[in-house]
Length: 453
Image (cartoon, rainbow, N blue to C red; front, side, top):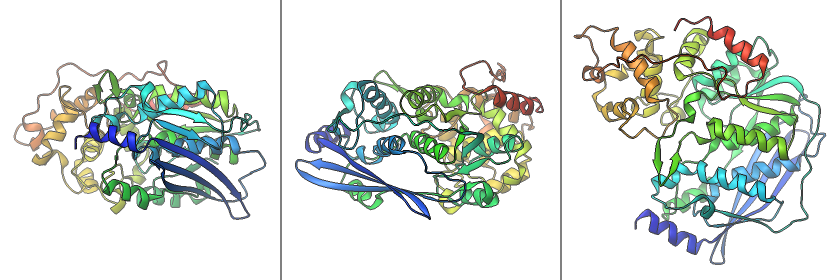
C-alpha cells in the first residue's frame, strides 16, 4: 500500500482525535500533569494517557492558576498521538481556542509535521490537515500574571549547543536552572554535574500503544519536539518565577531540507526563527507576559558555536552527545548524519587525536559515509533530515580542513572533495532576525570577540 493511499484510508477510518482532559496533581513531593487523548476509529475508541511529573523543591511555587499553560502543554503533546492516523477532526473537550489560536496550531501541526508529510508521501494543504473544534466553549482561560525574577532556564539536550549557552551565561546568572526532556546518559550526566541547578522533570509517553499502532501499519515520523519543550519551559518559568527561557538554536535552523508541493520542509521547523517569533507572540497574547522565550545563539552559525564549544566547554568533550542513534548507549554511532556533521564542525578546533578519541575513529576517513557526506556538502543532494547546518557552513569547515593536509594525507572523504574558492562570510549577524534582550547580546558579543575566525 502506498503511503498516500494509506493516509486517505486512515483518515476515513480514524476520522476523529479527541483531547479529552488534563489533570493537575499538586502534592508535597511532586507536581504531576496527566493528559487523556482518544483516537476514534469508526466508533472504536483507543485511549492514550500521557504524563509529566516534576519533583518539588523550595524553589518551586504553585501559588497561581496554571490551567491555561497546562491545557496548552496538552495541545502540544497531543501531536505524538495525533500523527498515528492524522485524522482531520481534532475535538477539544477540555478547553477553548478562538479562531486565531486554531490557525496558530494548524500552522504548527502542518509545518511541524512537514518531514512526516514528505516521508509518508502525503499530499495535503495546511487548511486540509486538521480542523480544531471545541465542545466546551464556556471553558476559557485568563492570562497568567505574576512577578518573575531576572534568571534563566536552559533546556539541555546533551549536545554542544546548550552547553555553550550555559558556559557563556553561568557567570552572569549563577542561579541558572537547567532541565532535560531527553533521558539520555549525556544530559543526565550534565545535570548531575550541576545538581543545584537541575530541574527534575520526567515525561512519560503511552509508548506501548504507539508502538502497537506502528506494528499494525499506522503512520510514524518526526514531530516538532522543540514546540513541546517550548510550552513546558514556559510552565517551568512560571513555577520557578524565572523570566528568561534560553534556547540554543542557531541561524542555520532556519534552512529547509527540501521544498515539497510548495511547502518548505524543515526538520528543524520548531527551532527556526519563524516558529520562535510565532511562539513568542502566542505566549504574550494568550498565556503570559512574564516569561520570555528566545534563542541565545540565533545570531551565530554552527562554525561559531563549534569554536565556542571547543574553547569554553572542554570539560564536556567526552560527555556530550548529539547522536540520536547512539545516545541511548552513551556513544557516537559514527555512521549517521549527526555524527558526521558534528565531526566536521569541530575538526578545525579540536586536535585530531582528541577528536578521534571522542568519536572512536577518524570519521572523515570512512568510505561508507560518502552518500551522507554528499548530502551535507552538495546543494544538489538531499540534505539529511537531522539537526545539521547549511551547505555553506559545511563547506567552509571542509575547505579549511582540506588545506591543513598534504595530498598524501587526505582522509577518504576529502580525496575527491573540491574545496570552495569562494570564502564563506563568517560575519555574526547581531542585527539580523533574533530576539536577544540587550544584556544577552552584550554577553554573546564579548565571548565571540575572544575567538579568532
